[in-house]
Image 1 (cartoon, rainbow, N blue to C red):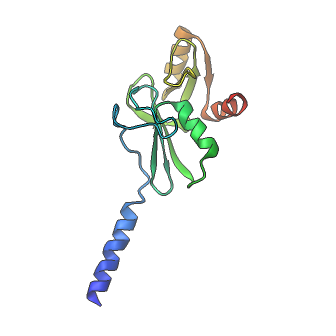
Image 2: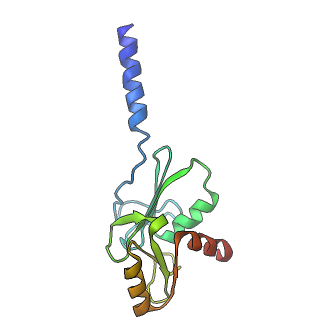
Image 3: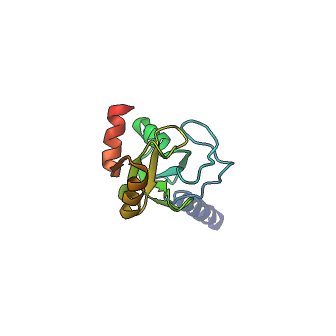
Length: 147
């Protein structure tokens, strides 16, 4: 009986640890985009989301993540993360980020879409490069219309 309890305890702890809802570092040059299958090499435009079951999906561009979300039905998405254009490789919460679409800032899949953790930095970059600013909600609406 003791062996059964030990086995069940180990099984339970394994199940708990495998369902952690936390981001995973993107291995640039090694990880592939879940949506388009291209290698993720651009640390200013990469993104990822994490499901309620702890599964991480990585993308080479924000537009790939948005397009994947349109048909994603596996589990609720708990974390939405985008790279901060002004701090390459640093992931930030997409829900609080400011997004800039500017023809003068190329992104991997051609949507000219970049994210900024700090709205003021996004506004400064918009002043330099032009384009239009969006919140996450506004961006999702734009992609519904356009893509």
